[in-house]
Length: 361
Image (cartoon, rainbow, N blue to C red; front, side, top):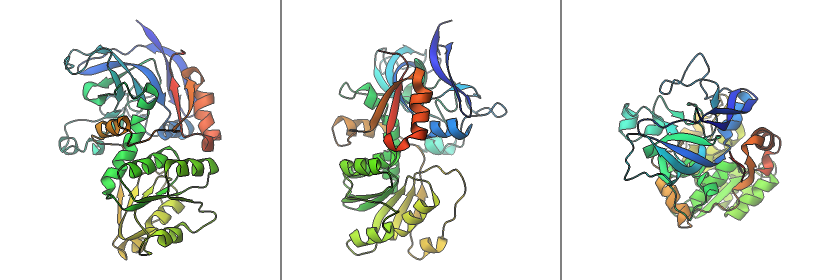
C-alpha cells in the first residue's frame, strides 16, 4: 500500500507528521495532489482548544463516520491525479488544476435540496470531519467540490479561494448594495478579506476596527476608508460622524467574535441597517434587544459558503478581488506545528495567512 506524508491531528496540542495510506478515490471522488494548504482559524481552535468540530471517538461524524485521529486542512489547491469510477470524465481530467470546496453535506435534507447546503444539519468539512484533509500529499474531494482554477491563478492563491469564499458569502447574504457603507470589526484574515470583497462589489466606503498596528496598515493598504482603534476612539461615534446623515453605516460585519465587537457592530449601524455575524463564538454573549428593536435593525449570521467559489475564482482572475499581501508565510508541512500553528498563536499580529506544502521543492 502506497503511503504519504500527512499532518495528523490527535487532539489538543497534538499534531504528528506521519506516513499514512494514500487515499484512493471511490464513487464520484477525485484524488488531488496537494500543492498548498492554508492554516485556518478553525484549525487553530482545534489545535489550541479541541477537539471542537472534529468528531471525538465516541461520536463519529454522521456522514463520514470519521473520528480522531484525522488529517487536518481544508483550504487547499492542487492537481487532479486520479478519478473515481463515477466521475464525469469529460468535465474532470487528470492534470486539471483545482481548488477544493471542502464542505461535506447529506444532499438529501430540505436545506440541501433548496440550495442551502451550508445549512445542512449534518454539515462537516474535509479535514475536520473526514480523514483526508489537505495537510497531506494527496486529498480527496467529490467531483462537484473540485473547482477549476485558470493558469493565471497560482496554486498559492488557489489555496485562498476557500477563505475568500467565506468572505464573499458573508457580503452576499448581507444584501449590501453598491454605494452603501460598511464597518468591519476585526482585521484578521477573514476581516481583511471581507473588506476587500466589499470594495470589489462597489461599497462606497468601508471602515475597519482593529488594535494591531500591522493589521491596521494592511487594512489601509487594502482600501479601508479609515481604521479605528477602539482603545483610542469611540468607533460608534466615528461611524456616525462619517455617515451622510449622522446615523451610522449601512451594514456591519463582526469578524472579531468578542463581546465588545458585537456591541459595537449593533450600535454603529443606522436604523434599519444590518449586522452580519461572521465570527464563530467560543461562549455565549449578551445582546441588548432594545438596541435592535428601537432602530428596527437586522442581526443575521452566515456560515461558510453556498455556490460562491465560481464567482470568487472569476473575481480573482479578472482582478476585481485583490489577493496582494494576504499570504504572510510559506512553510513545509514538516514545520507546520512550530512555524505554522505556534507562529499564529504566539505572533498572530504578524500573520494574515500561512500556507503549507507537503513536499519540499
